[in-house]
Length: 315
Image 1: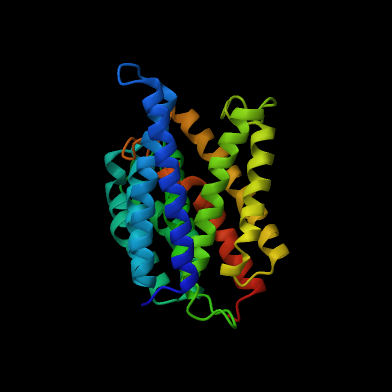
Image 2: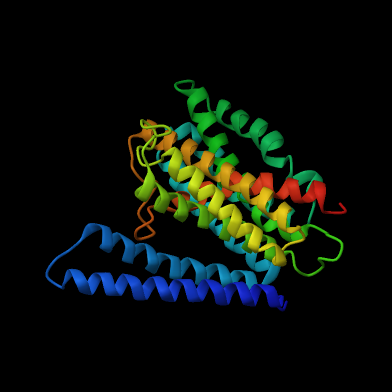
């Protein structure tokens, strides 16, 4: 599958931004000197290196079309759910239910996306998996913390698999006049939501005063959220050319998904605080775990998918 020209243009733009960020980070590191370590600069360098790796991985997957997207997000879902369930309460009685979740429910959900069976992949996890998995655990006869154990598994499936699977599901949408370009919807979603995360961090550092939820995430401020969400939405509006949206529609859709992404970050921060951890994992240098990078995307993906499907798609 050949990538549309718009995707190549966007990829070139992302490459230019990463090159510029790398040059700036190298300049800042040299100013500090080889003998002095600045934690902020070191963290910045680690994040830029991670962005290089993530951008390359996403670009390669996108170039392979639906197959590449399904495989990539299927693997990310597996890694994310593993991180999530590592921090939850489990017993030996849950082993069969967990094996079913990882090796049956997860691949079957992505298979349904691959064959474009919307009527089933839209309800398979929140209906069938949610009913079957507690039955499997109940049959083992372990009642201690049963509700907590079952709920945590269900919530892990909802966030890490069901919500995440709506990203490759964007490739199944049939939009008049937009044939063969649905891959750009994934690029639009990721660029706008991830861009919002970065811009919220920058605005928060520069102008942040009023904290939104100091107990959950002390670094998140109203100034950071509003500045990041609005500026990312303006970015999304200027990317209208790669979407089926008009300029003003791209702005509103961007505002919707950046807001959902921010809320997703808050929810996942609440879960981390409840578990007593700072990051979900340490596999991505400078970024924590897979869920730390996916939280805003997975919360915005289902809303983005259904908004586009309802207003622009023919099915």
